[in-house]
Image (cartoon, rainbow, N blue to C red; front, side, top):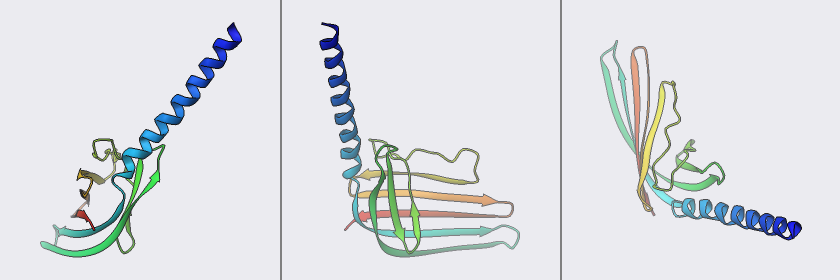
Length: 135
């Protein structure tokens, strides 16, 4: 009797883990595909009183980087990529800690992503604003 109960418990645990992993992969998949990105970079050098903004557009890809860690790989330009952890709601998880570089963003829908990367140091700041729309 105990061995049958143990077998049922093992089977239940196995099926639960299989189906919960698939759910994670499913919610990330809706955000993947080809996107057109507009990248706007704003640089400020305080000592020199220089303030510069420029924009470019790129075609890029969003793919699953790591299902278990819930990370997507967002390639938004020539050599430009991030790998944020993404919640089921589409919100990026802030993992900056005490770093001077910060990432915030979200998928406003499965066809649009918006994020900001900001960094600053003594005397300057750089803010990169990115919007992506599904092709």
